[in-house]
Length: 153
Length: 153
DNA sequence: GTTGTAAATCGTAATTATTCCGTTTAATCA
DNA sequence: TGATTAAACGGAATAATTACGATTTACAAC
Image (cartoon, rainbow over all chains, first blue to last red; front, top):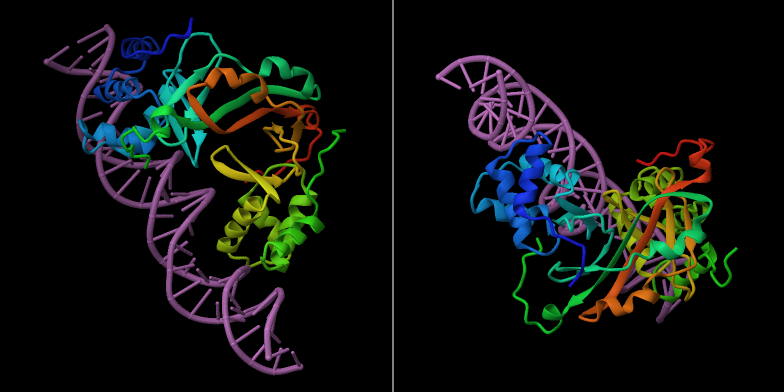
């Protein structure tokens, strides 16, 4: 249990869309729903597969534009992983954090600590604008083979 | 100055190729030379540009195969950055480390500390197999506009 | 030095992720 | 309801990477 970190939910996500002046479309709702049901990083292809249940002929342009939009609005957070961009529901709030990522199923677990706090002295001759810290491995379900096979694209 | 971290050099790289049973070709020599002259992450396209000085009609297949081979042999080290895979000369030795990366010119600076040391308690329910930690920003030359423009592809 | 052979390279095509663009559709608001 | 304008369509363009059969080459054995 992690204090002070609220996962973005569907209601807040769609509310944020509206208040920022974007339209509340069924496709965006479905996308947010897909992310809220999957606590792991999803590739564009995986999101597309989920979308096709309801929108079998969704344009890839729409898919990518909305993924970018949701990331801009901090409804989802993205990372580059294994050659493609992947997204998960934004962990929300002001609590800066990082993730553990399961190499097999993409499941994520937030980490409480941020390593940047101790490292500032090491880079005095650079102006730091960002950082990436991710831990990879296997979650307990994948480790013991109990996890169902997940289409990773 | 960082103690105990020897940058891979051309001689050792080619020696490593031979002892592992791979052939010592002029193209591989040139590739290693390009990396040894550039202390920063290079994209495949940048390496190709360097190769074309000497081998104007280099096949992209050869380029990518050799990049992968050099990475396997730990002659170079790769990372995914801004949508493509980039490589730099391997920092070598047993000293595990991470990098600061300049967003503009790709220049790198090794960091002495590894944040994993303090974080083990946070992931008891995962088997950890690797991690990535990179700091982004601007090096002093790029910050003050003194750096020449670098073709980043 | 000659030769055999596996590895390396070539050249081109296929694949895959992502973006672009002109047209059509639909959400929102007066 | 009608007007306005963003969103979506769909098909093509772009760009990184991989695949593959044919040819060449490094290198070791003779």
